Image (cartoon, rainbow, N blue to C red; front, top):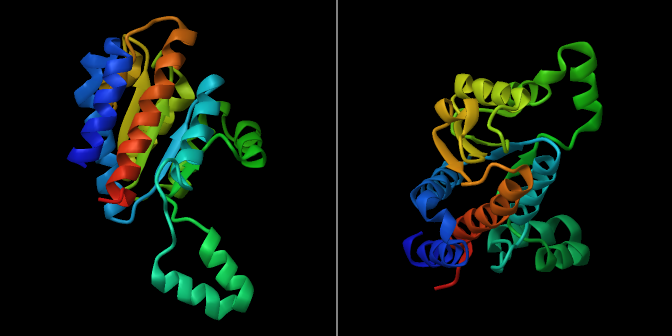
Length: 216
């Protein structure tokens, strides 16, 4: 990770010097994700409002190529051709390798069922119980660090053996004591925190993608 990861991190801190104090935490978050993917794990992500959109954004950067090429490997290309003939060959030439990531904000029927039948604060925790296995990672996004449904997801994740990355505002809120690594954007206004979260998770996605797919 060091060669390409350090470059992405240096570029982030050059553009946003206010994030220099979070540099080590960002590097640690990227490493947690890399280690999870190396062991066959996946990423779960949750947040509310703008952070809900951020969760989907992160999935979009990880599940297909972000900046690097991600052709499927030769074995999968062969199996696609065997399974689908000419169409399989077409798929082999178009499909990309993905880094498994699930936004817990994206399942409307499940979210409303949990809210109606169990407890509205448990919409994310219930999914962590269902999806999460040891070695997976949860990213919890909360500008205040005090969003109860995100906190409950974090608690469920810790109980299930997941690593937890928190992304919050300046104080970290209640999440500060619960996460394995906390990236606290040094702002207090919601919009200002979210404006810093985006380049942070872009950088993390770049660091992870570069580790697995960057051509030397």
